[in-house]
Image 1 (cartoon, one colour):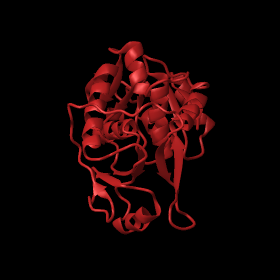
Image 2 (cartoon, rainbow, N blue to C red):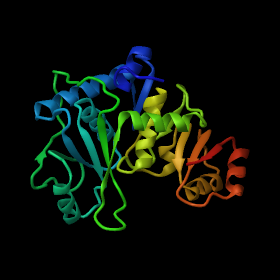
Image 3 (cartoon, rainbow, N blue to C red):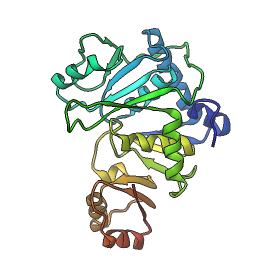
Image 4 (cartoon, rainbow, N blue to C red):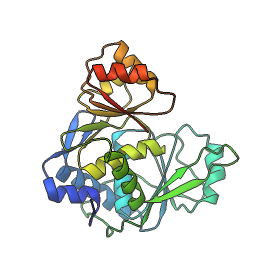
Length: 268
């Protein structure tokens, strides 16, 4: 798959009315999603966001986090998602070492010296820079185990290539729905987003609630083994048919039990 426009705009052209995104229980088509992104991108552009700008995004997984991220990318910005639980002192130490201009805080303190605070606001004047797959779009913090965390920077092309690699082994089609079960400030959560954009399938983003409730209607999920054990032990009435497991040792007994309940497992 080779994109000549932003992936969400590509899928709007290919199947505009197909379901693209489920935000809690609201389902957006690709056309409706693009309208949301255009309005938010226009709002960010009105606040001065331009191509190449670095934007710190402090937020957990919630519908507006995803929409803001897509809109910022459409403005040509590089997004640095950070865990809202990170200490303010750590972030203040990091900010001067990174090429950032703005901060959008949806959770936690909204004051960073040297950064202009952004607000979520809509505009009737849509804004979009041209699609360039080699443009830098994301900055992901490393673990910082040997000192201050560093930011690994990636392009759209790199993210999409990773998604293509996973999906060459793990089927994920237009009728499928992947739960955004991992945080967007982690590379694994970003992987879910880019697989969704590559495949043109559906993704679900829900406010935090018990896993069984979050999985309602989803066919795909990224889980740690303990989560899958609990689902199987509770004989939860889930619609899952594929799970990407990681984060711990994966017992063969677990994947065998999942297979008996119609759930295929992958490791990644």
